[in-house]
Amino acid sequence: MTIETTFKSAFIALVGRPNSGKSTLLNTIIGEQLSVVTSLPQTTRTNLRGIYTTEQMQLVFVDTPGIHNGKHAFNESMMREARGIVAQKGIDLICYLVDLSREFGTEEAIVAQLVSESGIECVVVFNKIDAVKSIDDAVNHFYELFPNFRDKPSLRISASSKESKELFLKAIDPFIGEGPRYFDPEEITDANLRFFAAEYIRKHIILNTREEVPHATFVEIESYQESEDRHRIDATIHVETVGQRGILVGKGGSVITKIRKSAEKEMKELVQLPVSITCHVKVSPKWRDNESFLRLMGVPVR
Image (cartoon, rainbow, N blue to C red; front, side):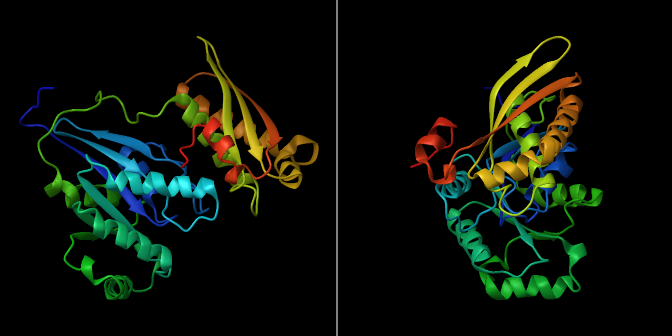
């Protein structure tokens, strides 16, 4: 591969607690809704690459699942994915997102230790500055708890604001070295349409259900058929209990119909063609701890 001496590139990991704003920041930078964003912690379940390209550079961002203490085999798999990204060779920079609007607890300590021990250059991104009374007090409290980050470059943003993109790119620019263009300039992600279909369905499950249901669902795309005039998707939504199935289906199928139609609308915007989605809801007891099920679904387990 020929390296263009005037071109710069880097692989950048977005790391932080659940709901710290990693996916929101990625969407702001790319200018598209690549990552599903909701108020529910652990919305991001797998590493997603977002690609930002200009005439001068290409940045490949890896949006990782929020690092947390999970009690299921599925949660453990997500954490291994996140830790694996930080540990793997090829990551040039870690952007450590810190949510200033919440107390710093055990999960923050786990993330801070992981980033500190990685040996990779780090920029601390203090996020949600619009949600705290005193930004300085919140930042200073973080430094009191994790003093080894005092000498790290940092910035303060609200990830959903347009201004944050320029501030963020300026802050990380010193860490972007000369390198090749890894992806076509028109690409904004390496994820396929099956991935987005599953994510959009899961997004609207989160938005339309409650309690444990969103965490207890797994969306399997059984088939994805493309034609010149329409995309047809057959999906199975796995839940753990009959009660969860009842909530997800809703009276007379009202909830699952709303989920299906909302996902169809988002997929239509993505592919610029009509989309038909069929959703089946299946009870798969304790799937989050069933390693055979997880392997079958392509989830990496021990």
